[in-house]
Image 1 (cartoon, rainbow, N blue to C red):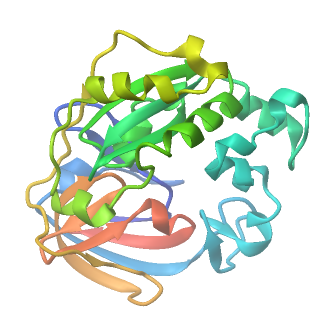
Image 2: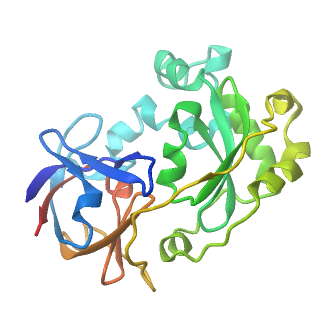
Length: 264
């Protein structure tokens, strides 16, 4: 089987285990169905996710020009506390920013390699947790806009981490935690503006990833340095492929790369 197209983050569907899909312009692949099979990947060219040009990808799937111009790469994407649409203030495109920022957002705890706090749109639960490789997660607050979620995350980061150790996540060096207890402990640190949105009674969400074999020591595949690679696919976790030779490949981190895939 052969597939070809520009890489975007894998789509996912919660289940036991989670189902992963790669969607190209003319191809569709349920990645779970190729576990334990030989997968070859080769970099053909670049294709910016915004302008579609064959220009080297700079960040987040965009060429350098688009990264600094498209509203989809504004600073508020990575730093929600910088959101200003609730004030009617434009960053790059106010209509786009209103569409994304002025909708319900969740501040959550997720355990991928350690407990971390994060922010996502409500519509992206549990997709965001799956993308991060979290085996358990819980909502803390549900607020009406991205700004309130951002200032809540900033306040909680003083008391708990906000980063994932991707190597620990991929080698499955993880411990279960009582996220309900953690949520209760963190409640008093939530800003006054968001206190009324605290979620009292929900439980943890547990996630099962389709992994047959975890790596003992991870080797990251960079298609710019190694444009052709072949290996036996042993698992998918977060947005990573895990291969039998301890190689891991970050699909989302390679967005905008136009690749050929061969399965045999």
